[in-house]
Image: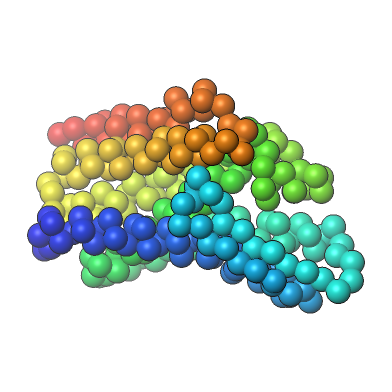
Length: 230
């Protein structure tokens, strides 16, 4: 059993490192992979340490024309890869009974950031289109309503899985009830991320989105108390 200081030092450090890795997955393994498959060339990659205030980005070029279908795969690539990475990581932690807590923390953070990265694009993009979602709407592949529905649906699935995993991790150092409270408090990270996005003057996001960002934490608090109140 790890001591609390060591646990939370690792928890914080790995959280920052895996946040950067999830952006790399989105940009390079997602967009970049499809660019290369279709014969394009990656001309630049910027992974932002300030995400979500400043978004990471990738630039590419093609010698010839790019079809709408190819553009669809390129723009959807980041979201798809992050969704796959998130649910694959969650499945791994569900199915593997013995994983050291260090590795479990790292895999949890990968699952979490990949989930937030992909569903955040879909949800925020559905409310105020930007980035990949705006491009996909322009291509006629997505609508704002479909983007919002997909984002909420996949976030809800990831929310359940991530909460279960995080509860098990917190139970390495706390009894069940305190671990459950920790899960609810953890989801307060969502309104913080939304606030950071809103503070960017280049992004057209309304302050009215802030109350919505508290829903995961409030829902977690209700569920954790209902399930583990005794």
